[in-house]
Length: 299
Image 1 (cartoon, rainbow, N blue to C red):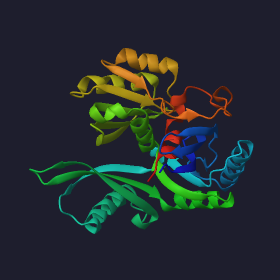
Image 2: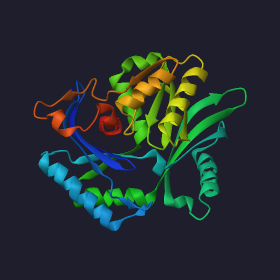
Image 3: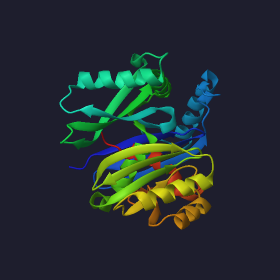
């Protein structure tokens, strides 16, 4: 039996916030609302109480104007706002022992902050049976940021459903809209003004994650070109992001040695007849990949 559920998806970018309402259905998914506005949650890199109030007001307006019925909210944090780290760990360690290693890493980067002030999840990327080592990706978000979002949704009578990272929400959008990638080796690249997030996905399995800082479009083109030339057996690169535009996409394609495709998060998502995309979406759909992706997540 098909199950239906309305989800409000939010992507908290460094400069912009994107919101969508999605009707999840086992048979299909339907976009019912979409919008974008400035991120006021932080000022000069610090939490802004006034900015949070503005965010609550703006989200409330989005819900009212679009007659949003979703009560569950899934949120994707900007990867630059989190601590992501890949570390080698011995096979056979208990979850407690793995947490101890990850907490030690956190203390090296944030010596004045207790690991208890973070909420951390982990994912095994690869295993080396000969060395008996696993490459583990740890993702840590400040507990304070989770609490802020819980307060926000509570004020609006909503329920916090899923917390994710924008880049891994894009991964969800990729898998659902491009099921054929489960049989290929592809790179997923998130293009931001000052950062590239890169996942290598082989036959549907996340094989590695890395990021690099960039200071210009020329650097973005150069690094993606290098990725295309120096990654053995890669089939294609799939790009998305708020900084990606048509001109930059053309430059990236010219500098790459293989196919570069812009991720369309609505490729297998229906658009409600009541929603006029031309009046709501500012820019190509790949800008909204993370918001759509986090709304598509089911676990």
